[in-house]
Length: 123
Image (cartoon, rainbow, N blue to C red; front, side, top):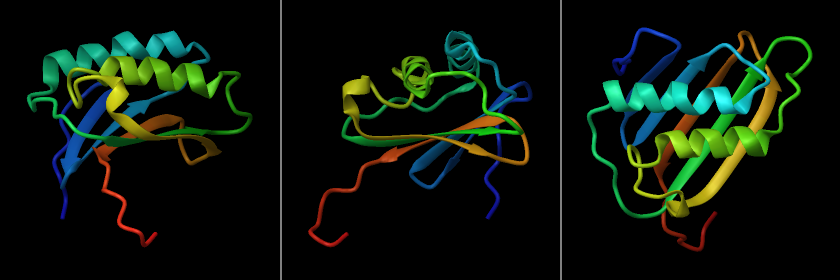
């Protein structure tokens, strides 16, 4: 099943089931660069309404060669600020946050946001 991507610039997004996936092409060492970039995309292109409840957010920075000199916590904060109000109402709803940097085939950032499953004992 191929879900359609929206957006034609550096930022694209799609919904796959209950999850939303965003990709941002290219990397910079300035985490603050991403907030207005993603915010503008969400403001102009995104049509779904934010929801309540707990969420899991996974942020993956892929780089080629040496990783960019950037604090992942600053990157996460900028991206959470940009999607707040579009995918969820407040970043206090983020019950699980995974931020990872690894070598990849291209320089990009991928963000996956989905409702957190209630704890059920098995895991």
